[in-house]
Length: 345
Image (cartoon, rainbow, N blue to C red):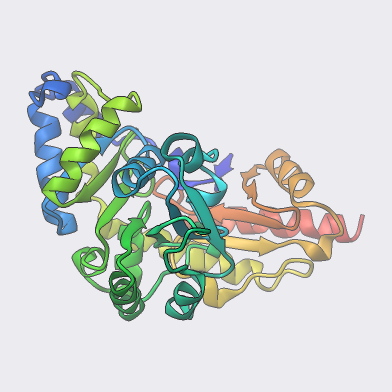
């Protein structure tokens, strides 16, 4: 089975397993786990922020950021297809009591203009607009990246509106590799950032939330309130320290995604926009097959390739460290054969 559902299916390397077995641990709620402390220190340095916090998941990291930046009744501006809007169970309203102002195509260009259009001046009828949430890479945007110059312009505009900026950087290292820039150049254009250790970087668990020391001190209390106060968690942080060394290999995943896209773009019944395959995510429009994506993905799984339906007509494929170039060639053949069978039963 070739698993292209997500880069969350990556397995810890032997080096990670050995580091986990040897990890020196303590009670992290008391701040006494030396391995967690080291992970947070190194992460903050790499990402270019004053401080960092180890959290179990990216979703928790995003929600802690929202809680820390806002007050109940505030409004936050997000893309209508962002992870925060689509895939976090309405947690922003559930926990922070904030309203999402969802903007179509916010992350797809002209972001500054759309931000100005979405922002509402303070008045008795409107909630206080407090926070802008960006996402780089943009998952449902086929893993596309927001260029560095755009990040700078958006951040400048947001600050001019007295908005905080949080970056959902679940795959921020994919973005920096694709753009050929240091990750710090991207994160200097936000007040807080979350990135995942458990996706392309290959750790089994965990994400990092980073920002100023003041922000992280407040965020640590919200982590405890949300049930994220872990104890001898250095056994997981040890894998995270190894994961931080894995960023450079993400270019291999990008190459494999482009290879798959090139193969599938020539298949009748499928539509793949090659210009949007910029990192490790590929979206294939299956409208030409006269079936829904769920049915297509089900048939594909039986044939030996796993993918995910992200809408009724779109299937998502994600490359990662468990997938080789040979796997991509095999998967391409399987997909082509299945499509041929569907079109000419």
